[in-house]
Image 1 (spheres, one colour):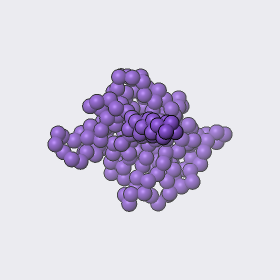
Image 2 (cartoon, one colour; image 1 turned 90 degrees about the horizontal axis):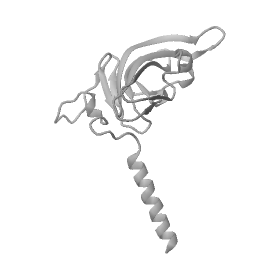
Image 3 (cartoon, helix red, strand yellow; image 1 turned 120 degrees about the vertical axis):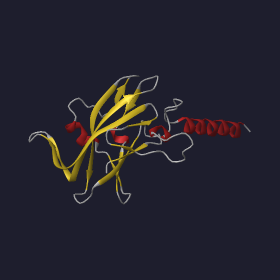
Image 4 (cartoon, one colour; image 1 turned 90 degrees about the vertical axis):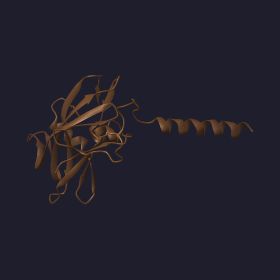
Length: 176
């Protein structure tokens, strides 16, 4: 009997943790915050230069530049397997407590739906102050940094999916 009760308590705790993973600031944590009007079922996709919200963060993609073969200097740097796409993003904490921005939680997609992960190692060379590597941002503060994607040479990125944490739903930003 004791083992069953203990297992039930552990299972309940794990379910509660799973439900609470990610950010839950009311009014700031859904894809609909990207700009959809009330009553819309589908969230509006933001474009370059337009703010888009996910959880405690408001993202504004400033620019996207692909076709970069190497980041860094001749002495210290890294070469792309294909081509680097450098995406400059402003990240503002719109929540009520500190939130960690992790560039590796961001995703990029080609027009055919192929998903690409961010290259955290290359981002170290693209950012002088490690803006996109596990950076705590206090409420009201913002940082601007470069998230790097290493994609095949013949691919063009169509959109980004930006996340305030690895567990959030994310918000879509069109690059086309």
